[in-house]
Amino acid sequence: DVKVTQSSRYLVKRTGEKVFLECVQDMDHENMFWYRQDPGLGLRLIYFSYDVKMKEKGDIPEGYSVSREKKERFSLILESASTNQTSMYLCASHGQGGMNTEAFFGQGTRLTVV
Amino acid sequence: AQKVTQAQTEISVVEKEDVTLDCVYETRDTTYYLFWYKQPPSGELVFLIRRNSFDEQNEISGRYSWNFQKSTSSFNFTITASQVVDSAVYFCALSEVDYKLSFGAGTTVTVRA
Image (cartoon, rainbow over all chains, first blue to last red; front, top):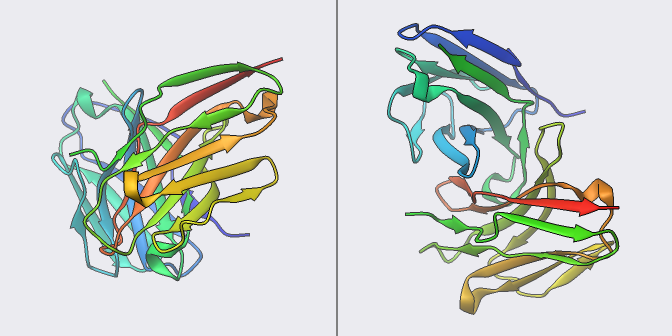
């Protein structure tokens, strides 16, 4: 059974903290994505990676960075968390065929910044 | 600019009615893929259907069907004879040659018994 696993389901952090959201996939996928989901805005792409150590900015990269040191792991970093980063964060990975295969999603991390 | 637009925010129907979800996309690529995903109340997104840019043949799969029209950049999705279990948020998505996968804002479908 294929799996994308996000390290936490719920997180509460303080303003200014450095926050790490971890995502691991066991499907040997090249492509991995981080989205945030907010009511009325759908899924907005923060960053994606098509290979180890490679990263591309998505539509809303400001305030975030990512790390992909190993193929199976893609980390999202909030350098200094702010209240407007309170959101649901979703990690996804893309199948072996690249753009023509469906993405698999993790269960999401609901982050609250207080 | 929004690459995937889902104009309908919410749709509410009575069980057994058909539901059509609209999706309009924007891309300069000649090769691309379109998807529909479902997000039930449990939260995890589930893949439903896929269509590539070279195949405009419309299909039916069980109670799902889709209408892909390149001329109008639309990829609409229909649930026939809706059921309460179809209640969810539905997302249209576009995958382009640079591997970027973009989603629309989602349409919340509520099916009442």
